[in-house]
Length: 219
Image 1: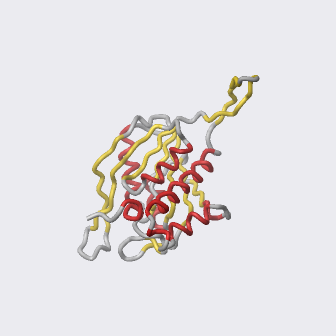
Image 2: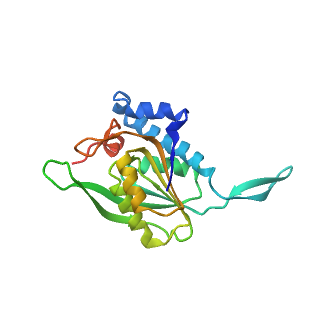
Image 3: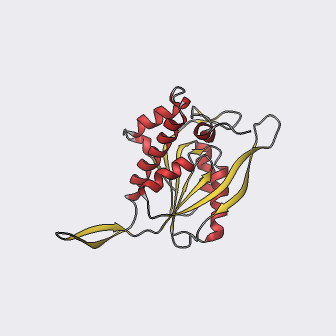
């Protein structure tokens, strides 16, 4: 699996990352969601540079232009619910893409909340056979939900290429995803890689629970 860490080069992405980490910015959910969405847009633009393109004639009112057009048939999938604004950022760029949704969420398996399992409950997806699959999930902590989501999506076909997209990842989560998705045609895109997790399996320094910050706390 190829790993592309966008934070290795300075860009406006640094500002978006700083704001989603900032406790003061986090008080405004709309601002927080917007920054997650903008990171998705930025990542989608970078990802688009890796697609297959062919020349196509386009007729304008004043003549004919030759434009290199992307040929990949895209399916953009997301892990509910935290992935929704990140997913929207990709849709803003890949407006012709099909969409898939997987409900995969963490469940603590011990009283101390130090061991985590993943529960997959719901999926809605088109066929991904022969298509370019993009799975978006802003937090790649343990890697369990991404691995479970990918396994669920494979029931609907074998993709031509796989792109995993996360805002913040940990080395441990990356190792889990690399083992779960060993295909050579897979690429992991991250905005930044943080050092690790705390005892409750939250990324440190990270920015907290993405779903709660986007939509409010859950029971």
